[in-house]
Image (tube, rainbow, N blue to C red; front, side, top):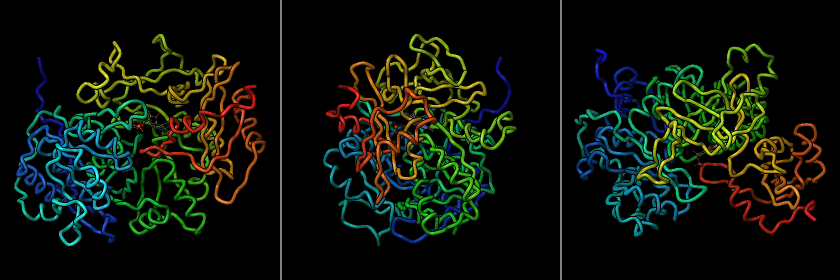
Length: 542
Ligand code: ADP
């Protein structure tokens, strides 16, 4: 027997339909690539997205075809997204921070037929265009007046919008139709594509908007600094229109001064970004004496949030930090460190220690911790294990079946992260499986040490890697990039760590470096660091 409720496929075009119908006058403000601040509304975005759908159909785009975007967060980018997804085509978000060879690989693998690009990236595409033969059309997200000849043959977005009608039917397909495609940055092997469905995005939207997750609503003014090309801006390009929040799109300018200016000018109440962005904002505020008069909460994820950021926001600016964990493969939200009812009863300092963990799973994420024999591990906050996830917005298979079968016999996906889970259900990432330091058969968390070291007042960035050791297999090495004009000693950094980590976790050496490389999604690139340090021998190794 089946139930008797309506069949209403969960497709994302309905999100923008809803925003148009019930929040049609709510604003979307963009710092445009051309310079000025531009304003539009959900009603307007809806209309123009439909025009883009018609333009794509005129180009011959069929359901299932891949259409890429290489663009900053902007209202035009949002229109292109919904225009693509509304007709059942797949919106493939390209990350401009990737190396050209990776971009070429990804575009060819996805067989993108059209690329919507910002002016910023036109030269980059011109350089690689002969290597991406599947791409038949380039659309530059600008108007005729600003179109340059950097990408010959490209058309101006505004001409497409002007040249097509907004009469277009969206949806009407199965909710399991693919909607979006996003490649993991491929720190090991080739990048792999995660092919989201309308249903997975829709469910992720409902879950992430809820109170204990992002907790956003129609009265919020949201600044997604996390790019739409990085795991769907953590779903905000769906959840903001779903709840009718005002959206503030930062365009290309993500430095502290530009972000601050937007927050204050537009009255932003909630924002989301990786830790490095917040470090830049806090540094800017401290230098200029700036204030945050409207911002209430920020979500931080992508890499572990350093304690100094949580304290800085809380004590100096009265802003609450919510720490989240996830990955491209989980749409991306996996856990969030909102206070449970028990944690909420604890004193502020104890609560802070839970904020630094990656948190608890929302409905829709099954989480488990296992050892190498797949045995379930205790939730004691100490036992390290492999973190596995399962759920309706977790990857089932990579695009085109790359990597083969990726789920275990019970349908769980191995995240490649190593974690603990405590008695309150708070998960804490201790490392990526490939970065964990194995010393004398025990595991040392590189992330924990580097986060503490990064809190040293002289440190701008800190990274910890495992280095070969004849007796212990591997020992930790701390690499520090000092703030401009500072000088430091090994002793003062080791003293700073003393008492904050187990004695045997103390790095065997501290090396000061000019640069700590960050990957395309803002995380420390340990592969490059290990290559750079390949000739290095620990002083304790003799
Ligand atoms: P990649 O950067 O490898 O393409 P993602 O952007 O999907 O992949 O990043 C996912 C990974 O980022 C996670 O598996 C985890 O290792 C790391 N990560 C994400 N959020 C956090 C966090 N809050 N704390 C620590 N690590 C995190």
